[in-house]
Length: 220
Image (cartoon, rainbow, N blue to C red):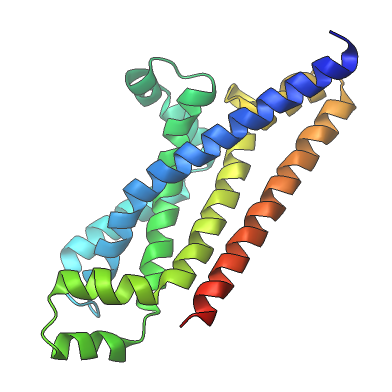
């Protein structure tokens, strides 16, 4: 294998690892954060089911988790990664802290998007006899869909950044490639390639997310 083939193989494998980490952690963070965001919105004192105590408890937990720098949180979650996937190093292990780190961010995005729904629409649905579950899933979520798409886009972009930082402690992907090969072995070509691919991924995701959000707004 010549130098160019080795270069392509290294960069290609790292890119695939990053895509896998980001895709799976996006799914898991949405699974964790989506219900939390809904609960935060509906239990707010101005929500459809006010429960101030529950709202404050969940809100404090979300705020605490959001306050941790990602690398510190990843180190703290090493034992959990070992329990779930059997190791604390590598692409698969990094998905656990990525998901947990992004979940509070997702929760706040969902909460914010749902709170932007016109109260008049919610009141109209309630006047027609809709149950709370119907108001949430048939009124609020569809109305908030463009904002939700924008929020998910921002989440994915943040996860790309988190995955790059995870490379500093053996997380795999483009961040790991840039540090182990680009920085530690003085391979500026690999460092530049990793940065360029991350920039391309961010731009592509932002473009797709913006287009999709604009289309949803236009269809209203």
